[in-house]
Length: 114
Length: 115
Image 1 (cartoon, chains in turn green, red):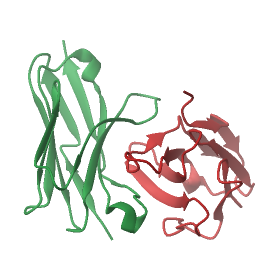
Image 2: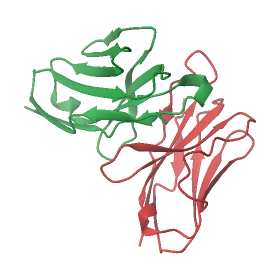
Image 3: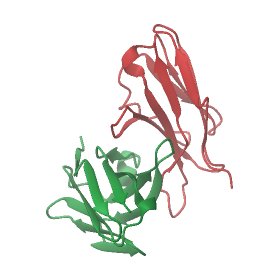
Image 4: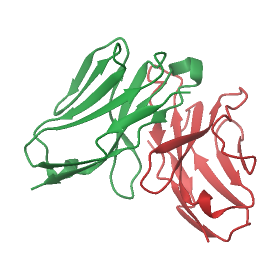
């Protein structure tokens, strides 16, 4: 089955700096890659996603890039703020053929220091 | 509108007892998923329901775990003869059948502690 690896497991950045989280996946049939943010004790919230027919997607300070050949995708957060502190999870899905079920990475704990 | 809801929010049980966890998906969402999140870990897929199709049970860790979805809406995850390793947060998610059918919206989870 699909396997998703996520790095780093923890990331500490100074407010205003950029943060980058990387994920690799094993199944070339995966075609949907969402990123979720989970604050302590809260539910995971979708922050951005990308389909395999697109190489990059941006939403304000957040961007995701996808390299299908290398089977990896990354989350980029620019101008980090203290409220960006949370655990971020990447995930991969093979879409409708596999019921859209998500395989998650292990998570990255991001701490933004003021 | 209302998001995905789950109950109870917390459950403490003794080893060997059965527990039932409930999920109310977003109204109109045809797909419902259960995931498990162990302490400090990522989310692990358990089971998936889509409309009236047979559920995908491929992620259930043992036959002590089962789930049903009544009337295409509410779902119940049952864990029989609970073990300490079952302690985790159980998350439910739902998605629509429309243009954003691949987007899953999560509930707040049920935190299960088996003593």
